[in-house]
Image (cartoon, rainbow, N blue to C red; front, side, top):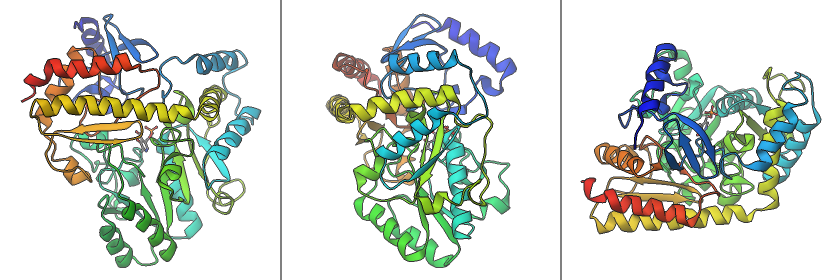
Length: 429
Ligand code: PLP
């Protein structure tokens, strides 16, 4: 494949934008080479600036669960845009989306819209602190909750891809309130709760992790977290920015059968426009301004274009819940196909899969937390990434990311992807 124009555009971008990108993982630092500049996309395919067609397994890092430029979403945005792009006043569509989201997700009465997953998680933690009157937060190594200061302590995703899970610029004062536990290790959480008794406002977790690759929570672990929170008066925050409206209508809460106190959303809920949200039962949401004392606001929050994209997206998912099954089936088919090729070629790997989230880790040990995920062989991963790209398959450019399947992918696309791996497998060793 030729990437001449992408390379030229990247060189130009680097003159004006730090690293040439507006979000670090896009720069391909973890895998080497120059990033690809996309021109347009439709369904399961990206078309880059050099005219290459790529099968997309990122879907804008999750939002585009029905594929790119999905007509009902695009039409809703176009029609809305003709009537004005922002008012800073209440609009009916905000309530329509709120009502629909609340009807789809268990255990929430009210929802507040923001502009990103970062804002959603940041606001959820402030709300938890305001509600409980406590300061400390437990998070898990390798989980990513956006780039707000309190979360950049052993964060996953781009933060760990660049080897700086603890970012300079986060003050000691902030860092000391974030306590770090190990995923799937209930004892590590209990120890923190005991050592900080009466001081912990919330535990925030990706209920199925996607930012250290895909990591599945053990049942006893996630149930144990709920019990611990109940015993200690700690709020359990499910960060469903990735899993919300992707694993099921009701997200991970529904699939795992665990009730969270506060739930955060992003990605799918905005249909590809910048939207995040956080939601909880009335008692907790009542603490939020203007009803309560915890301040939170946004000039563009509830933006009509973003709301219309979200409403079109959630309406479709609500009306056709078989999409979740279809996506999980496709992911299983892909996973089994790729696993067979890797096994046939004697390449050590672990494949973690949950619903339409999947990741391959080049290690022979089970990957259950950040430590085991970090043991993956990045040398093989780089060859795998570039090999697949040369075959027209666009995967996340970091071993610490989950793939996100979209429903526009056909079984033919999946077969093409499995064949692509067959073509390059012998070069992976
Ligand atoms: N939480 C999770 C689980 C995420 O995966 C992400 C982003 O990937 C975020 C929060 C932050 O969302 P955003 O990038 O929209 O700020």
